[in-house]
Image (cartoon, rainbow, N blue to C red):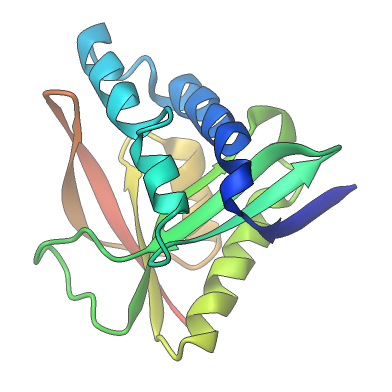
Length: 171
């Protein structure tokens, strides 16, 4: 059975380990090793972005647990767009990660539903996100769930700049 709940500070270590593992499995091949190492050092670990955001009330996390282990999560918070697209009335979905062993289980759809419900409760009109242009699985998932490509975002992995697609779903 899969349980869902809001993440709390004591989830930090397990959430961080799961996110790091999924990020490396998904993107670890996409840049030179020094750039991957630089990104991972900034994003994960005790002083990384993920744990800082978990402690920041401006961000909301929903986690999926199976047998007490984190198998997925969704993080929403302030936008990092800087004029690429209009953001008024939108919720920014920063990350939706699911352990590959749980792909096809409905976890991603459940987490996305939580995100959209949160946006509606906040009287927002849309959800926006970025997805790496070469992440075909994620792009197909978001398209299946009503997201459309509305712009591009330059995502930095170490010194490498990748093209992320900005996608939007009107609610």
